[in-house]
Image (cartoon, rainbow, N blue to C red):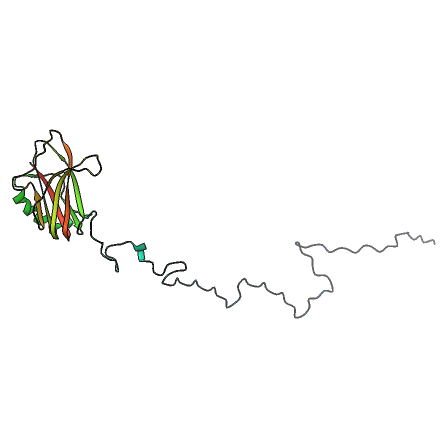
Amino acid sequence: MTFIAGCGSSDPPPAQQPQAYNGQYPQQPGYQQQPGYQQQPGYPQQQPGYQQQPGYPQQPGPQPGQDPNAQPNGGLQIPGLPGQQPAASGGGTAQALDPNLAQLAVAPLTVFANTEAPGMAKEGPTVAGNFQEGQTLESAFTFQPGKCYTVVAVGAGIQNIDIEMQYVTPLPGIAPSIGKDSQTGSQASIGGKGNCLKPLSPFPTNAKFIVRAAKGAGVAAAQLYVK
């Protein structure tokens, strides 16, 4: 009997590569994880026991670059704040007040007007203000031909108050006087007791009256009357 042997390749078949399972390779045969080995956890961003220091509060007193002798509020005088000095006297414009807040002067002004301007009507608003010595307040009006004008003023705390009527002109520094008071004390009037002032011009003229604290400081009020 004759046996026929097939001729095949003498090379051994290639080893089969492990297939990935779910994107991972299985553990190779014969491989064992070393005992005592553990995967190190990721370091936290912040070390245990560390706390961020809170910001230091701003210390009172002058800051770097600040003049230690600088006055608060830039030296601005604000009434009512501790440490502020009273405003200096000597001129300028008085602080205008609502007449309702100046009753110390407005109430006696009404009584004084009854004797200085009887039967006359008020012309324009009552002018009231808080005066330092030498300060003034003004009020404009129209000097109408055919009418007669009286102005009265009363001060509270002011020892001597002055009032004057002037024409208003477009020329700086030129304001002809219409009349001045001749009284001294805390009450004054121009054209009072039936001697009201009448304009000489046949045309309406711009005019004003000026109230001035000639001596002392306090509250004052003034009113123009016409008939």
